[in-house]
Length: 143
Image 1 (cartoon, rainbow, N blue to C red):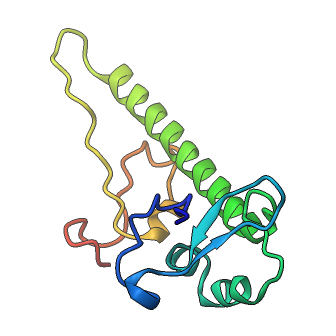
Image 2 (cartoon, rainbow, N blue to C red):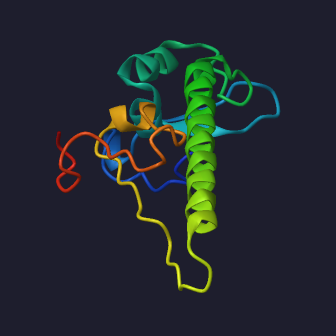
């Protein structure tokens, strides 16, 4: 049978009739891609899986990427945020090393542990010398 292009068949144990989840084959001529119901449900939700079940014809997410647009936009935003945080961290480490006394063995600067998703929004680019600590005690992840 067809194998899901997302999980490569790893989700194909248990599930639908006969223990296998339903696998939907793209109806676009010459495509041949398949996606299993479990992957659709876990990535896009139950409503998306129900819509695929009802669609005739159904086009896979390569042939018709519109259902993935929201996820792709969110992914791009998360990657941009990660890159911004990484750049700020690099700048903070550069300032740390530049301020270290000459001739002394300097280890990496103290790492800043993020304790909540709000801390990601509050990343400071050194307004407090890079030493501002996030809210909470920094040990448990709870404020």
